[in-house]
Image (cartoon, rainbow, N blue to C red):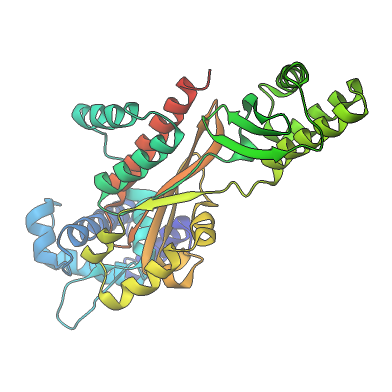
Length: 365
């Protein structure tokens, strides 16, 4: 897929061949007109799922040019690979390349209305914990966009420690609980080689929290090592086991989790033959993580053949990261047919990512 700037150059080259002697201003006007026609084709096809003809564009989009002129410009767009004619004597539909140019150069984010903003904020503010936030977020995205929504839990390795709790279950058994600044909670039960009294447990709890509270999870190991020097042999053995488990929870835990919602929405846009491989791909957590791996703070849109997964090349993916203090903690996105409403979908993904980051930020203290 060529870059949008290359497309502009292609158009100007064609204008040079077709319109020798025309002024540079006229060529710019013609390019703008062709982009307007491409926008009209994308918007009509997204709305109707029917090939778009010149008469429809002339009647509905008020471009100030005749159907005959529109047909001539559509021929240029077709030569550039931006639209195609699916059937003889039919209208045109966008290609993946056409959608890419639309997203990069033409599409504008549609502002949320005040009721939409309030609905999103109210829906997320009703969450009680991180699991509730994630599940509400994925359901909200699926409902708003009518597509498949994918949300990644905040990455444990990118988070900071809020608190570590040691909960005695018996003199030789305890539960370690690790709580992050995003509200994520990890816990593990440990069998100790020696009994540990409450005094030792309280002292160890205090030293661990003093060492790692507010630190990045990736720095936990370095902060905890020095604690062992202050204990005798038996206490050191138990403390070492507790600390090693905390380190495993912090940096070795398979913490990447993804949830999705709205798979039934695929039935509205894809044939039965196309749905099966898409659903198979979406069942794999590793595939979902790869789909979110290219997410950025500024929005990432992968269209059709740009998808790395072959079974998903009839779909498009809109993704964005969310986080706290400008640091990404996870990602979320929408998967749907290439014939999606990109402007509205990008607006929804952007808005929900901002609200999730704000919600986590407000609950971090």
